[in-house]
Length: 269
Figure 1: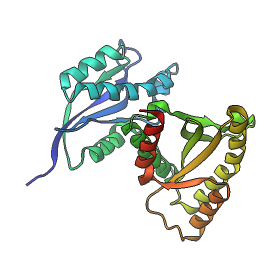
Figure 2 (figure 1 turned 135 degrees about the vertical axis):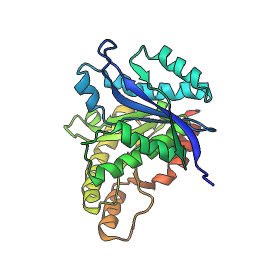
Figure 3 (figure 1 turned 60 degrees about the vertical axis):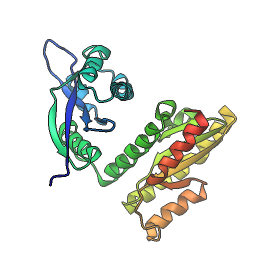
Figure 4 (figure 1 turned 180 degrees about the horizontal axis):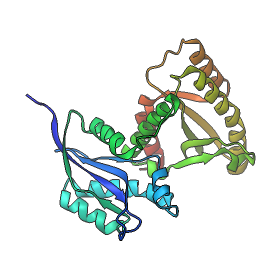
């Protein structure tokens, strides 16, 4: 007996000019027979810029959180979902027709469909980028689940605090008496992890000093790593030691649910 679930999904298309009807797929919504919809958005919006050089990428990125809220209100009602999308995004986002699919896991099926429909076929990513993206996605998912992602700062530029040309941007963080920062750091590619750990360890002390000076607050940084790493492997152990020397905490990505729950309690979400 086939235990897979019968699901429906549709694509969200960015349409800058309704007359030309040219579009780029930037999002995907999968509706399982029960439970919350699975929402995926493209992380690389370079194709949007190719189609529309004047596109407001920050606005498009903000649509994701807005859409999640509307889907929650819709409670799986397909017609209501479509009306909300059409009423809310001024034709900048247009839904495709519904398509059917079978899924062992709605979440995994949404990931697979997103790779098919939202990623450029010619796009190539290094192992390090893929690993970092996976950690970032999991981090965001956990913070969103506890309703705090929208309250957090993202892409925190070290240079804005230190006045240097440091290019590092910390992935996310929040403040309530203490500034808590989180940064994805894959360790599976050992040599890359060493270099990334060195960058983080070099920048964080200066960032913490600057936050202390500007905001009169202490800062802590958590490097979020994969669940399955060999902490005894020489280069991984060296990376962890580099972080420890600068008081940078290390947490496995599976621990992010606890961090998100703590954030919700602190921020009152």
